[in-house]
Length: 144
Image 1: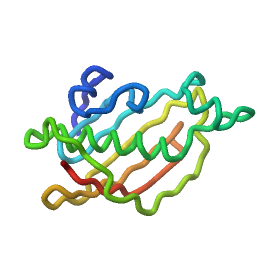
Image 2: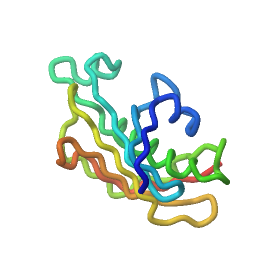
Image 3: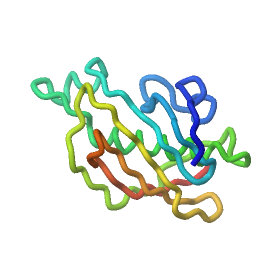
């Protein structure tokens, strides 16, 4: 993968997600159509922490999976023939939640595209904090 430095503005040129649902802050590695590595800085002022959970803020696992999917979408939608399209969820398989993600964590998001046939593909996705796996999943997408 090639080293890149894509911030929020550049990410928004590739995927359609916007605040408050854009869940990646930076893409640092990218191979269009093949994979991407991105980061999210988890901060206490994110709205979900008010209720999840007031005494012990934990980032919801489904939002971590969504951040991984957005990272994969950057890889897929960076490919010339997919520019301007949307990548939709088709399936989430073998999702494992191994570590809590809390305010102050820097979430490393990696998604490698392992299969693609026509508009359907599969990404192997892993989110880590300080080198320890927080979430892993196989994400199926459909390009529309």
